[in-house]
Length: 124
Image (cartoon, rainbow, N blue to C red; front, side, top):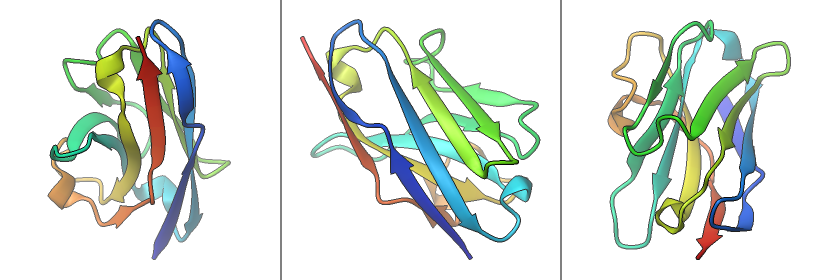
């Protein structure tokens, strides 16, 4: 069992930055692939970024490439999402998720554990 808790969301102007954190408790955090997803009102939960258990490989949605960076610190059981050059269309609830190493990183159904989410609002 893994418990995930996101933090770092808030209100920011377009062009600004936020850093989201996802703290994990439970067993064997370092063996899990980790992902970030977002969900806007009335829309599906969409893939944002993912990182392998070792941190050696990262994956990004095309919409965030070059603006967002995912990283992890296995010693602190934490995964991060650095979001720069934010746009109003980035406004959503952001969720972190954990899954076994072999999953499809962009598929929400492949992840076993989810946090409660943190709201990110980007004003124009």
